[in-house]
Amino acid sequence: MTAIKGFLQLIITDGFDEKKKKEYALIAVSEIDRAERIIRDFLTYAKPVSNKKDKINLAEEIYKIVEIIEPLAHLNTVEIYFDSQPSCFMLGEKASIHQCLLNLFKNSIEAMENGGVLSICTYQDDSNLYVDIKDTGIGMSEVQLKRLGKPFFSTKGDKGTGLGMMTTFTLIKSMNGSIDVSSKLGAGTTFTLSFPLFEQGTGKELALMKQLI
Ligand code: ADP
Ligand code: MG
Picture (cartoon, helix red, strand yellow):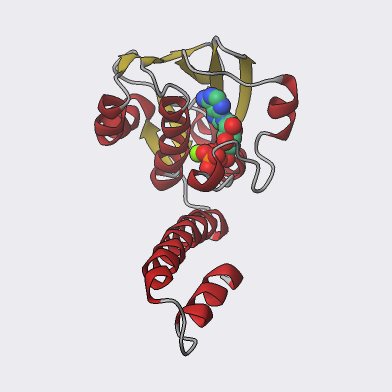
């Protein structure tokens, strides 16, 4: 904002070089674009997370977000593969799940500027539901991995805000989930999300059944 104000003040100064006016105005516009991105990501982060949790079929939600992100994948010649059992249930908030998946898929695709493969798969064990999000992109160094999720950490210069992962970590925690990452520079990155499995007959229902037996 300070930079934008500075450029605009110069432009409106009497006798300012006419040729430079356009150049400075263009710089101000690109700075406004950057501020817009930061404010948008920050508002998403600051949005209160509702406590309302619904039964969610995660596979269904992944399909929706894959559809939304497909044009971006196309631009970077990234192929998306998705493998899942048709139904896998968890408790959570749809809008939060969407936001997390969007941030993670977008980062993966952005890490594969010269093409690659984004593979998504879900699986489960007795207590948890897992999602692997694997890319064949540029990967991260140890130092970068340590900084992942810290506010404003970005390696994308003007194009990045460094707020996506911070938001993702917070939202996953709010749904009692966890996130793991393994990455190798030049080889790719895999994020693994884990959420408690939603099982029919847990909680109140199970207690009731026990009383009946
Ligand atoms: P932004 O995407 O705006 O830079 P994020 O918080 O979404 O901010 O990500 C922070 C940084 O983490 C990125 O700039 C990038 O360096 C790194 N990163 C995140 N996901 C990946 C990935 N899949 N592959 C490589 N680097 C990644
Ligand atoms: Mg991002």
